Image 1 (cartoon, rainbow, N blue to C red):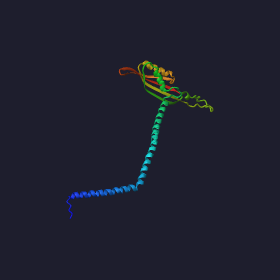
Image 2: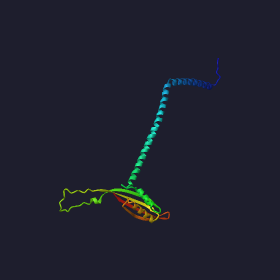
Image 3: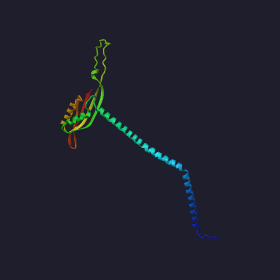
Image 4: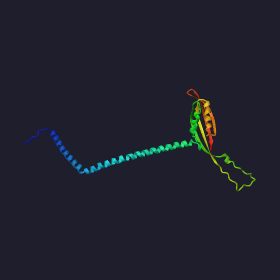
Length: 213
């Protein structure tokens, strides 16, 4: 007669551990069989992932090229805006630009001159001399073969300059320099006003230049 003197809890733990080891070996064997059976499928999946990574690596330069193209397009738009601004500041049929005229005027002064604001505009207006028509007396009959006068249009460009000078003589030299360029037939000093900056007396001025084409 066989009598088991071991505690019941110890017996159950040994039985459970034994069953777990048996099932572990069984599941491990089934996993190995499953992996071996589906090895071609996993190989294809791995090859597909490798090809996908290769495609991404090939497409990376294309994405960088597209990003560079977008950035280049933005720079082109910004450059076109600046070119348009420079064209608007250049009077037609003139050999020097407005900025060059102002810079030449500043260089002509003996003391300090600071330009704070410059505005340039162009408008098309009817020529006054072309609008004057020679009217015949009301009693006279109209001549059928008389040449008809056409209204001609011209361009008027105007530049307004606001700045600060150390003294009134510098403003006079600046105005004379603008007049000597002959770019603007009409150069008029609109206003001068004393202004204190850091307890220093300066002359604030506004100059208006008008030309016609």
